[in-house]
Structures are given as C-alpha cells and as structure tokens.
Length: 451
Image (tube, rainbow, N blue to C red):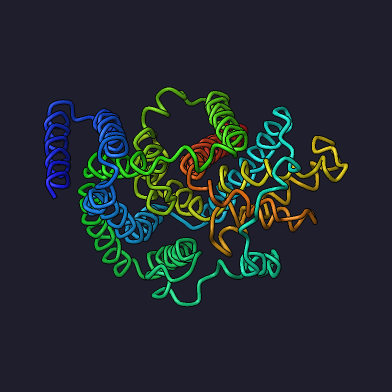
C-alpha cells in the first residue's frame, strides 16, 4: 500500500510540474515531451524496483490515461459533426463537397499502396523468410479467418452507408465514424438547399450552427489541454509492462516493421517537400498527436487531436475532419499497408514468387488498397488487414497468427503512422484542391480579359 501511495504522489508531483511549465511556455508540444520522459522513467522504475506493485499502481494511473482516451472519444463525434457542418455552412454551393471527399479518399489509397511497397521492399532487403517461423504455433481462430472470407468490395461500400445515425452516434458499428461523416455531408448539402430556398430559415440555422461550434470547440480544447497528463499515465503503463522475453524470438520481424515505418515517415516528409510544405514545421505541429497515437494505440481517440493539428497547418476544417475521420477506419499506412506487405514478402519466396516483379506488384498493391477499406468493414487493425490481403492473394494465413503475441509492440508505431497518414491525406488534399481553385479562378480571369 505504501508503494502505491508513493507512486500516486510521484504522479501528482510530476503533473504539477508539467502544469507549471505549461503555464510559462504555453507550448503543448514541450509539455507532452516532458510527460513522455517522466512517464517512461516512472514506468521503468515500476518494472525494475516495484514489479510486485506495478499492476495496482497502473490501475490507478489508468484512471488518468484511459480516462483521457475516453474523453477524446467522447468529444470526437460532436466535433466531427459540428465542424463539418459549420464548414459546409460557409460554402456558397455544394459542388465541391463530393470532389473534396473523393480527393481525400484517393490520397489515402495512394499513400497506403506506397506504404505497402515500402513494407514489401524492407522485408525483402532484410531477407525475412516465413519458413524461419514455421516451428511456431499460430494462434488464429476459425472465427478470425471467417470474418475475412465473406468480404467483397460491394459489401464493404454498402456497410459504410449509415442506416441509423443514432446507432452510429453510440459507436455501435466498426464504421460508425464514417457513417457520421456521410450523414453530416448529407445534412450539410440539405442546409445549403435551405439557405437557397428559404433564406430567412437558413440564416437562423447558420447562427445556431456557429454558436454550437464555438461551444463544442471550447469543450474539445479543455480535453486537449489534458494531453500531457494522459500521455504520462499511458507511457508509464507501456514501460511498466515491458517484457523482453515476449518478443526476443521475433525481433527480426519487429525490427523490419519499425524500419519500414520509419521509411514511410521519410516518404511522408518528402511528399510534404514536393507539395510545398515545410516538413520540420509539420512534424513540430503533429508531434503531440503522434505521441498520443503511439502510447494509446487508438486512431479513433486521436481524431480530435488530428483535426486540431491539421487546422493549425491551414487545412480547411471540412478537409481536416473528413481526413481524420476516414483515416481512423481506412487507408491506414501502418496496419493496412506495411504490416500485411511484410508478411507477403516473407511468404512469396516460399511459393516461388518474386515479390518485386511488376506482375506481382500489380496484384498486391490493389489488394493492399482493398484491405485498407476492409479494416473498416471488420475491425481488428493489422491482423484483419493481413488476413484480407493474404486471402485475396491466395496465400496461406497461418503466419498472421504467429505475430499476434507481439502485435501490441508493433501496433504502437503502426498507429502513429496510421494517424500521420490521415493527416498527410488532409494536407495533400487541401493543397491539391486549393491549386484547382486558384487554377480555375485564373482561367476565368483570362476568359474575361479575352472577352
């Protein structure tokens, strides 16, 4: 009991220190960085000197860590709904909404296919081979496999369309977030119609929507201000549960995953450069988001932070909301891109297939894109994405079950990359759409001059 009380006191003192530092610097990134360091130190000390009490201490810490995650999930739905609706409210017509959504989804699918190629190339260069793991026991169940066998693209697309928005507001479906976005876009288009056909009523609706947005954003900012304390608690939990023996035999696979994820982050940085964005400023802005995604392993809980970070970089509110929301369920660079591609690269040579041949890549990359949508249909992150891709390619799926034991270790970095991929889609789509707008305005100006 004394050890538990001592660690609770340590956490409170560290929280007070972070609060005082934040008051002086007003920098969330700095506060989060300090929280990561303190959480890691607390977690390692628990693991090394107080292992017998670590579970009880972490249960108390989880009030802050898991409570923070729950609060982010709580504000995510009203934030998505009112932010998209408010952004559409400022539009003059609905012509650009469909183009905006398709551009974002297109960016996501392109990025996840690039991630798939990076994962395949990394595993191939490192010489990973599935036969080296043949002696290990797979933990796949028949239910896991059956969830992927019935998946088809028409069914996946149909599953995204909501039938009961109140059901989706409860998060009852794995694609509830996408359902809410689709409903909000429909409500937004209807709002523009009302403003055209009944201007007086439209004006009343606009005033109400703007007032609700201000209210919701105040609530979101209160929750985001708790980020350092939530991250510190989550980080302590991660380091207190650190067990080397759990993944020593699978170290090569873990290393390949982390190397590929790092390579994909470098690709993201290069895309930022080519699209005219400063990667240093970008990563400074998104650092708290990536940190939270890493320690929480939750793309859905990261939505409010991802939206806020994109808006700080000048991304339109509608694009930021759609990108962060869709990115929580599809186009995931880590889970649906790199993770299954590494397994494909390991299995292909055992079947006499060259994984880098053009013919094979033309089959695998669309399977990766399909798998990234399939994750939205069945849930379960990297495991189900890998099952979908391997099943689509008619590859054996037993290897997926071998890596389930170490998936949490890989999933931390995977989730950070997933969230970064969604934000990248928003940044790139915003750049592309703005160029089109500028281009069309220039064309119209030239037409007027000619006339």
